[in-house]
Length: 100
Image (tube, rainbow, N blue to C red; front, top):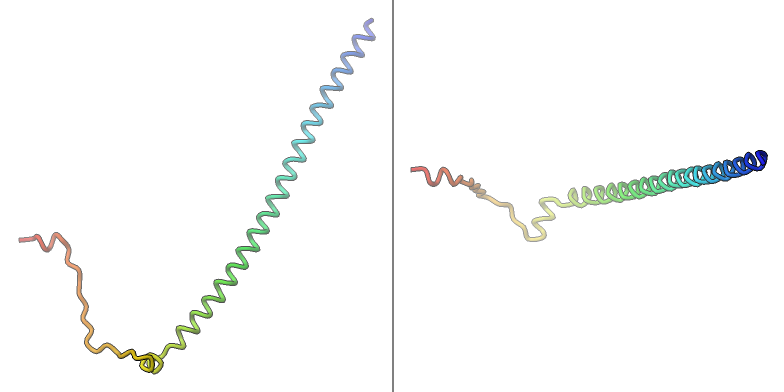
């Protein structure tokens, strides 16, 4: 009789430990999988950033070349003329206008 009670307790304890171990193993697998996926996503993001930086660099180079290609001779051939009398205006503040 006592042997049966002890055997039942051991079986119950074994089942509980097996369930706890299963839950812990599932949690471990979830977190390892999550960490691996985040590393892959980070690598993908870094690759995208690297590609975009290269594209921006190419566009900046193209812009600088285009900017340097525009000379005074080229502008005059396109019909532009140099401004001779340049006048600048300044913005007056509202407080100054209303000051008596």
